[in-house]
Image 1 (cartoon, rainbow, N blue to C red):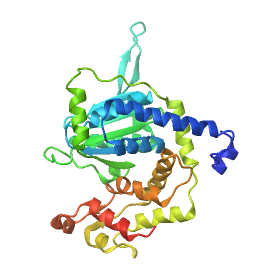
Image 2: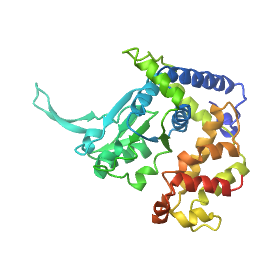
Image 3: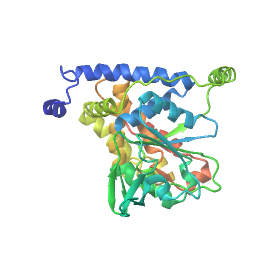
Image 4: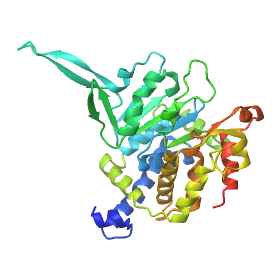
Length: 341
């Protein structure tokens, strides 16, 4: 892409128009392929596509048996990306995630050298299954990879191939034997998506589909890593007006109880609000959301649509909220009603 197009963000130029068309058709094909396997959960699928297009990571919170793992694997297959899964357990070590150096001896010369053996983190799509079941030391093995897109072993930096996407799952109700994610790691996730129960009709469709066959439908590859990187570039070219950016800033600032603009619910129930990183993620997610909806500019509705998954893991409630049975989502919805678009 030319520097002029990068600077202007012109999505209707002769050079960019074919990429826009490719983006639109590819996203439609991915949705079709995912729906071959996954019934319902359209909003969650859109959130995962948004995460991919922004170049972020997603925390998926849901009950057992809600197809979290199946959804991630199906999406990776449709994207044509390399996929690895790590089952997080209390005895998992950091090197089980990142890989390690081993000593190899040349059988002819007897010379010994260090050789790096990559861990499962070296994939385009990494499923961190039940991430909160492993101790903080092992959880921290993901920190550098999620932020810097690299892994350091014995002082040597190993770069991860782009795109790199961590999709982590956790169970919201089972707390025994779990380790809450550190705030620094939570903040590295673009979204915290809640995978809820299906509707009655969708649940019936799942039963009818998967109790009459033993094999999964075959998912066709729709794209590749090179095209996805182009789509990520395209998302960043979507223009955002100053007023929409201001709305994003006002929303995030309203999550901070010490801010003069914070609503009463935030002052009463919130200990700590979201950081500047949340504002950047909110704007980027809104850009991807607009493009996924076939629009080439960001509106306040795009900001509001992505506010809950961007903010729900960045806002820490206090004991008053727990006492009153008020959830983070309750506080955020009240804040959205309070802050004028």
